[in-house]
Image: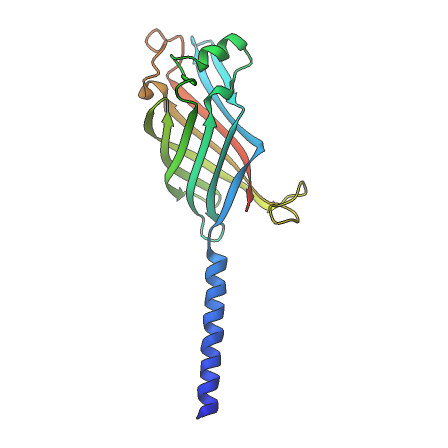
Length: 204
């Protein structure tokens, strides 16, 4: 009887250890955006002739992702509005000014996710809030998980090869929703802002 009890206790201990290890593996991994492989761009109509293309040169962010389940959480991306670049010095200064980004008073643009829905094997719909020039409005991103693998470049946070996840995301919002209505009425500058986001993120 004692042998049977000892065997049962050992089996129970083994099961608990396996369950604990499985739970640890199931914990969503934290990722940080790699600033050297991060592009946050935008397209805006200019008098109907063509779209002006620009980007933000400085941003940072992180999130948690579980590859097995596709669960995405804790998404937060901060963009320095004064880092805007459209390949035209005067226009860039105008964009940083009070009628557009007002970078002096609002140096950060922040996106935080409120929910994420898997729409395909590698596609997601990410609903969130975009904080811009003192106002917060809902924005939805359509994201594609391109690839996850050990990178042949660089060193990971714990040494060895970094494990990298690559993502492409797109979204649209109206700048007038944030009170940014300069040249909307006369059609000189489009109201819709198309966002183009490409990034690699390193698992921590």
